[in-house]
Image 1 (spheres, rainbow, N blue to C red):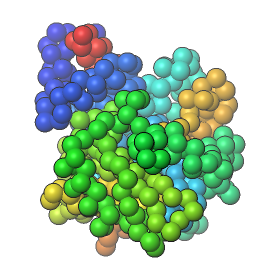
Image 2: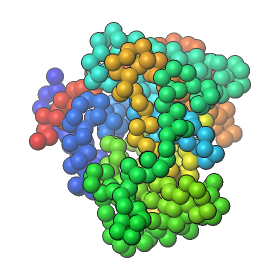
Image 3: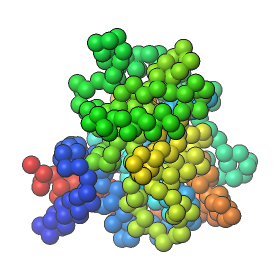
Image 4: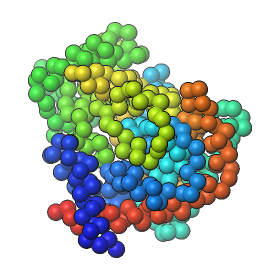
Amino acid sequence: MCDKVTKAQVVIEIQEFNQDRKAKLVRLKYRKMAQDAFAFFRGTDHLFASHWRQLHPPDVGPAILISGDLHLENFGAYRSDEGDAFYDINDFDEALVAPCSLDVVRCATSILLAAQLWKLTPVEAMRMVLGFVDHYRGAVTDALRSGTVGELTIESARGPIRGLLRRPIQGDRTKFIEHLTERTGDGGRRIERKSGRFRGISRDRQDTIKKAVELNGQHPSQQGGVEVVDVTFRIAGIGSLGLRRYAVLVSMRNSPDPYRIYDLKAGSRPSLLACTEERQPFAGDSDARRAVRAQRQLQAKPTAALQVLTIDDQEYRLRELIPEENRTGLQEFRRRSRRLRRAVAIAGQLTGWAQVRGSRLEGDDRSGALGRWVAGPGLESVIASAVRFADQTRRDYKAFSSAVP
């Protein structure tokens, strides 16, 4: 049990981390974090970083480019610029060069916390962690042996993930747009405001973003350019709440499928930099540019429209909006344990493939070191580390939730 000093330290550290963010959104973030330990974990990667020195595995493995904030909610289905559907890691805001075990431990910890939320037994939870780790090891080993890094598409997917990938392929984009927009008096469309996911912004801010997107935010598949129809503030996720983030409704000129919605997000400094002393290859870049470059390297194919956009001397990451229901889909498998275990195992496979890509740093191929680490005893200690992190997260969550009204 946490004593009063520890409780105070946890709350103070969370407050200090969020002090430069928008106050209203920070309050919303705190309410979301207070829902359960898994949500708390997703919103406090900085606490994970602060505990890393004491709780990491004995052999942390080689430093490579990793996604940084890997957990079960950061996998999902998306479209590439060519219109192909992939299932992969889809969040790279925290991407950095750090020990390969960091991502593996963090995702294994998220599995243990999510399993408790899903009311699985400890045995069922550990079986999922073992499946994740085994498939991670197998993906790295097979990729290095064959010289080919895999990818998960509608053609190659099997089982539960195939159903997730069929949504963006077979789904009606018009229905998605209708779900997130509403009719205006002149027969046009604007982004809906009723759900609370989108909020209006000033006319001056709208005009600034509109100009930047129309000038430099052209969709790669659209030769006629784009016209911005509406811009709102976007509220999504947990960890990034309080940062500047916008939804941009655009009309695609000369297209039979006219509307798209872009997600425009300001970058932030990776919390997990405290976990590594490695020289960062993107040190001279903005945080938005770092995240985009990392995503282009780590994903099988990058998300549609992925690019960096400058607005008022600040750089943002721009991509086509991914429907929330395509992010993981694991929630729908919670009462079908075999399908859930299979989906979590596939997350391990995707993590392995991404790390093989990330091990090939410019002028420094560390894939051999990664292969030796996954074949040795170092990977086995990841599970024990994840158990320690899950226990610590539950203690931190208890301290936080007791302090939040």
